[in-house]
Amino acid sequence: MRRRPVERQQWVWGTATVVCIAIASAATADDLRPLYIQIDEEAENRYLLRIKTPPRVRADNVPRIVLPETCGTTLSARATTVIHCTHALHGAELTISYPRREVANPTVVRVNLLTAESHTMALSSGTRRFRMPGPEDVATVAVQYTWLGAEHIWVGFDHLLFLVCLIWIAGNWKRIVITITGFTVAHSITLALSALDVVRLPVPPTEAVIALSVLFLATEVAKGPHRAGGAGSGSLTWRYPITVSSAFGLLHGLGFAAVLNEIGLPQVEVITGLIFFNIGVEIGQVIFALGVVLALRGAALAGLDLDRGRSVAGYAVGCVAAYWLIDRLVAFT
Image: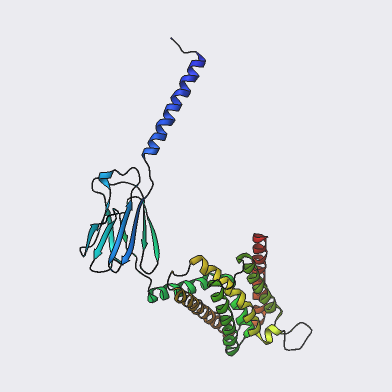
């Protein structure tokens, strides 16, 4: 007997409903909520281990942590595993082991150290090994943040173009050293004050004013040390470049601080991270400045017209800085 159209529609919708329920049930059964592991350093060489399993992990398949041979475990009254070791676990590789069968859930590991540092690691499905983090030490933080500071200068094109203009305006070695020193001292002050939350300014307008500072110097470079139709010794920027480098250096320091806030300071060695980030910025700055000076000297020895090159460079940098300024103004307005 053939089904009537109404009955056929009811049969189709009923079948679709059953299929959807089956899919939803399967999705629920395949629960991929993470396994949560917390390790608290309670005392020297003593740790508390807590494991929270997702619903899909059966009671007889709760994982355990495979520890180094120098460690032993006991179970506390709160069902927390107490780990006793002869040496600290810092840097040791630990393994998650399931007694019956592997579970494909991801894992979140949180480690709280005696120094009040907290570390969180997210392990993808199938990853069963992780390295126990240790407390921050001055040497590691110093190397890491020095490199971060140098790297930021080399990819911060607005800061690099500002330096190019400063070097071109300063001219000789003595004035270059004085001018860049003023820039360094100024941005070091605001970098420290902003990173330590003593001074707070919104980032978008700060970035816009940094672009304006590059545009201002590019205009000075394009015009040259002597104004058209005038003999004098040039503008204040050309006569005393350290005043401009110091004034705008305060703004550039806020820009460096914005980057440092994105990276994040160390949890304990805050001052060390701040100092060596600044040192890294200076190292990157000096290396770039030496490269620019040598390039200009090489161009002069090759007989190139540096005066015409200065004018072309000023207009080129000015166009780029004007674009940055408009783009950044539009972004925050």
